Amino acid sequence: MIFKYDVLSKVMQEDKTIEINKDSCIKKIAGLNGVEYDVRSSNRHDYFVFLPLNDDEGLVISTDNHTELGFELLRTPKKEFFLSINTNINLVDYYDGPGTQTDFPDVLEQEELDQNYNHCYGASDQALKETKLYQQVDNCVSKYLRVDAKLEEKLNLVIMRLAFLAHSQRQHAVA
Image (cartoon, rainbow, N blue to C red; front, side):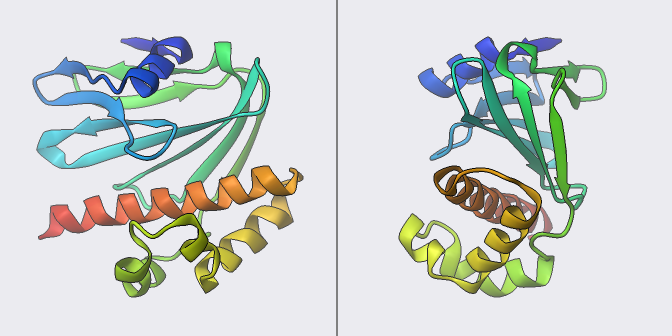
């Protein structure tokens, strides 16, 4: 099944869930402009957050709670982006068209997430910006990406929020 950006944007705007099959769905990520592909039986979550750059182009920040591969940032035309879901094995992939991809495999380590989870998960933007973790993410993002300060701040916050969301859902699977 193919889900283009226009369909995904409706999921985000209208906060509607698309049931793929009895075990999986695409739903809005609470508090972020993004979607989550959720496979219930295996507690597997894939996250895609969208930051618009202009009417035609955007950044997609993606990660998951099961591979520990870190984050991918994609700069891509919105009309080119889509999720492809293999409903037989509940596997998601994406196509981002022509654009730029930057990988951040170790911007936040598991140990740091463990140590800072209680303080940072659900914290305000301002509280997050005052942490050492924010500075760490900011150093990484500013080193590898050339974006304006406002967009850089948004990226930093999205990366932190997704990291703690994935950590939360990973911990839930273990408990």
